[in-house]
Image 1 (cartoon, rainbow, N blue to C red):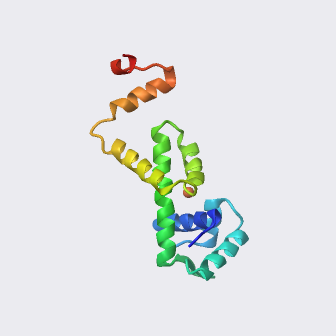
Image 2 (cartoon, protein in one colour):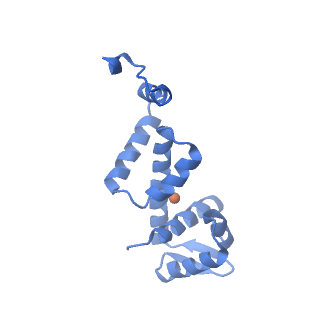
Image 3 (cartoon, rainbow, N blue to C red):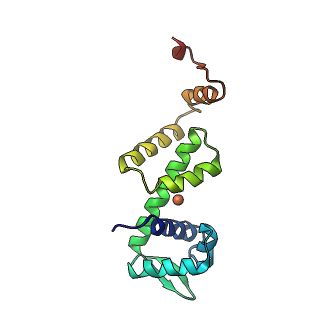
Length: 150
Ligand code: FE2
């Protein structure tokens, strides 16, 4: 199913809110995406027509199986890209914001490699040495490892 970037953002935010609270209300999504409640209602109705959410005025929004699959997929991309950006030294807020743009645009192979790198760094027994060298390089423009100077 071809979804607009905006539709993906809604599914992602409903997924994220529901993961924490178990359900999502129109006002939760409005706060999360910094939009007005009527905009949320409009989009949620469209997503309901597509079979991605179930919207009942008083019960709020529930994701269908397919809606949960897409929301989870986008959220997974977001988390991986954000982690990657933080690894290369982007401050958390900017990393979060940029992850939300990049999550819609990247080739799946790029996302896979970003995920691999994040896992590689996170599962390293210590803080990886090359990462420390990179951090110093960002500050000083100098290679601190001998191999880099040879
Ligand atoms: Fe996002």
